[in-house]
Picture 1 (cartoon, rainbow over the protein chains, first blue to last red):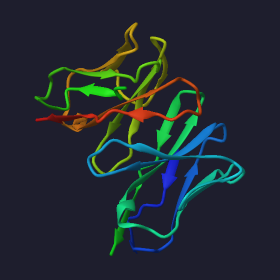
Picture 2: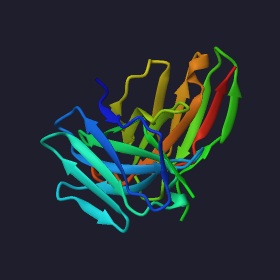
Picture 3: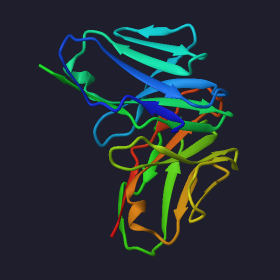
Length: 109
Length: 113
């Protein structure tokens, strides 16, 4: 079993749609959680951190369920500019950062 | 302020050769991590260094090594290159705390022929 698993994708959605990405992790000692965004042939950039209480940043909502070892990202009112690969990231032991394989999102007009 | 800088940006090497990739973290950041990203996959963790000490190592062969210098810059070395080492090599810097954002450089695209 992979340490971090994501929906395989790709997701193809029209502008304005709501899309949800899911991620599971295997190490219950995981300490911090993030969603990164990676555009084609670019470096990953932090989209948002994920907290147990859930957090929202504009159209983006992230949730963490430690009991189920599950992380989610919800994007509302999708824009063309949201087209990218979304990477689920889990950090434990203070140094080991594990990325999921990423889920590609295509938003079309 | 300069972000994370990596050099070179592109590199072509022959099987069996050795390569050294370089990374300068954001000023004030003491931790540098290295990742390998193969096309279509997420970044794979190779090493993390903090205050010049290795703090973590991923599942990579001993052909991969790294070090961090007193100014917190870092080098990744790969010996006896294989075709399968062709990838984007990313460097990320953080302040060192477990829950802080990692800032990535633009990467070095290595092609082994």
